[in-house]
Image 1 (spheres, rainbow, N blue to C red):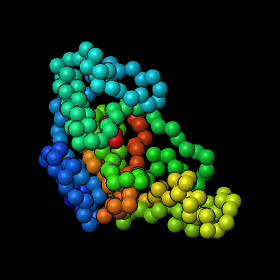
Image 2 (tube, rainbow, N blue to C red):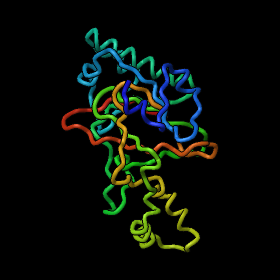
Image 3 (cartoon, rainbow, N blue to C red):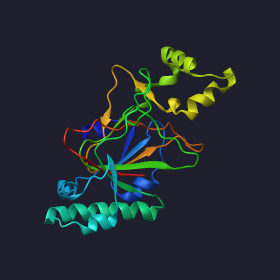
Image 4 (spheres, rainbow, N blue to C red):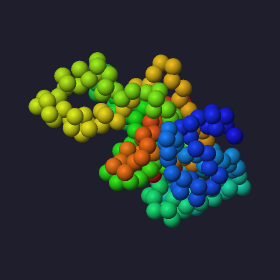
Length: 232
């Protein structure tokens, strides 16, 4: 197994989907990994899909319609099974073929796009599931190795300059514009790459959450290579 995963108190390793969805987050552990070495040719799938926009959702019927090699067919069955497992669990998984996400370059001192380390928030109890089958994979960081950007004095001062309203409304302004979800990693921080083929469950910020939400980011895509990502 990947030593980076097993050495991290942030990450819990499991061997089955049932363990993945039924293991409770606790203490510093806010990321669970169903560690898998997948067989199959996922590149065969990516090469035969059509990218219609920077992000194209791929549906099961799209996968089934592809003419694939034997290894490509194995990869397809793995993806279809993952989609079915998550759907049966009550989640709403999406399979995306990705060239890139939209960038946020409105401000030079803070970014709110997914390439910035951030947490997910939900009004209801839920988790984020993701698996990268092909292309660059996401990173996570331990909460102790990052600081909420809105707590950094220089950034907070710039945000106050942007805000035009009463002092008591400033925190709501930060939430409404998602500034409070983004984090600055420490200089000596050591992000963990989530790798290919593993199905992850990440803690989300919601009212019933017992642990800190998992800080993560989308990777910068490799030149000329698409990502194939399951997420919900």
